[in-house]
Length: 428
Image (tube, rainbow, N blue to C red):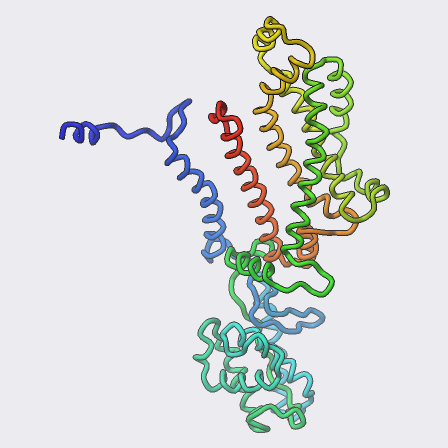
């Protein structure tokens, strides 16, 4: 009983202590929060209208002079009223012509006006994706919406657009209750007014859009002759891995020798210290000329971007082996290759491992640049192509995927270090 009382009186461990680590539970909690915080800020900006929604994502577009907007396009919230006004003026002219009898129009123009409603009909599950361009189904859907506006539950029409749909259906239904291409009216219908919902700028899609698009792109069948997302993913990983392994295979032995013998340090370090300031992308054209346009120059660019830094880090890592340790080994008779292989290398291995983890992170940062030289390939082709088309909801999933893979790889290597070098588990 007294023990329980003492435990209840035990003061709580403070969160803020200089020079002392938090317990594992609190560390894990804060690690999760470090990822959750930016995601929550992203959600706050995306889903709270009064904070920052400078655009309108259109549900209904149209032609406005020489400019055409389609559903999904973004326009400034300050510009939308201008588009609405232009459309209203065109509709006023159509109504005026009807009054004066000066009616001139075309079946094709009316059909285009009907099709503008398709995106909203699909969003409200009145049409399926397969029926998006089906004129018969679109025609019938106009009648349904005109007679029963409550069908548009997910994304309703504005009052002005509902009036336009009902006005249009009054004209259409007089000709035929179903779509009849031969008897389709040429009497001009009123144009739907542009409408949409407040949205982030196009360069910052909402989280749910990024997640949905990422899943859809990953599952989608690629166009003929194009790789799937899983194939692109594999290609990018192998590009990073080959470039990094090539850099490590050469840098490790040279770094150990350069860190051990000052003779080799003076030969290696000055040049590579100079070379590391040369921007690796500047070698892109040269690498393509030498190695071709496919994977080889991409791997070579990652090698060039990683090797000089890794080599210099390794020479410094090996050089800081404890001097007393070397002196003790020499006192016991170790010298030359024995001293190098039995003392220097084992003592340096944990820190060499850390250097390799850092270098692998650098290799990932070179991926996007490397995959742009020669023939675009891997995940970077998606980033570049969709970025140019301003489909940023398809760009973010790829960027996030690269970050996740790099982070998880590093965390796995950190865990592996605790097994390989248990005497240094205090450092992650």
